[in-house]
Length: 219
Length: 219
Image (tube, rainbow over all chains, first blue to last red; front, side, top):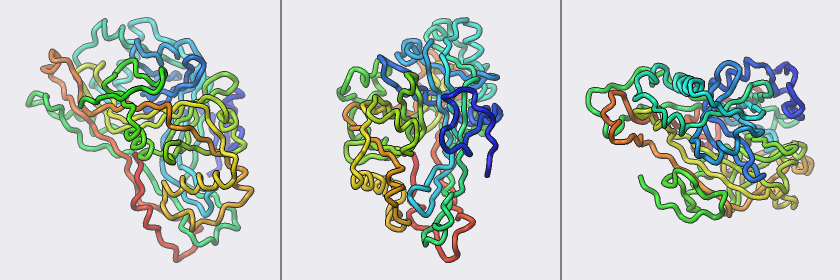
């Protein structure tokens, strides 16, 4: 699969290697962010890098993530340079040499200065849309958020202006002289399996499993 | 599930929040690293954080990852402060309030100054053990690594001395006053499903699927 990379938006998003895997198309970026909520946010704490695992969600041309207002990671990231990386693994690619082994994946990196949401209405709407992304319709059925809970939650955001994607396909790219080597080559596909939901032990009787759980996707 | 956290090895690994989820036991750390090859490495490029997706593997009390010697990420990380984060997602935890929603997960963070392997024999052995971790027995069946390929591959490593784990269980932790709220609560489990391997289109006939593929685990 040969891709035609569009133009990198900045020097640090421009692929230096594996150009054929790079993609700067917003549609590709949106598709990766919408497929995979898991994100790894890189920021500095006392000058050293820290990578925090969290969930991200997209609203239009911005990416959002949240955490406790008391979290040292959220405090360190607000107003600072961050890198949010989102990775979907689609399989393992087995080649004839160790060097050509790879992972089939879709990954996105978003760079910028993280902006902290301060308007309570905007924060509330962002959190509602996070829940809508995961479990459409659930927000309105929850015990409503209190002012104290909203205050205890920090929401950070970045525009999607400085971002890049890389996509690695399932094909092994062995050089022609290796193709006759007598070892199996191919791809071992991987997906996220969603299991059967199990109820909290203290769930009152008569509350059925909501329909949106069967539509839940990850990756 | 209440865990008894052991002692944090440094100030930056000490949990400031969610102490009950923190774990500094080497056995917990080893189990997470051995379960999940996917890693997100945080390092600085021109003073700003960058999070690179890669695969990690453990040898004894060290963590390793590799990349192209030409990679700007590998060059930037060698000899510099890094944070390697490994995350396994086990499910989504649905509570009665938005705030108490969470992810069931196992995550590890390893901090330190990345050391670049320079001895060719040591590098070769580290790469062999990476392959052994993923596909036991495959290394010896591959087209042997050339000196040029070894040179083109950089291997970085960290001791596991400064690390911490966090484990979030599948239980919703709603406060007592929320338990009667009429909304479903519980856990939606998630696992990585390994699909059926498919052969490269140019695989010569007569080469069967190796047995180690059926033992492959991720997460």
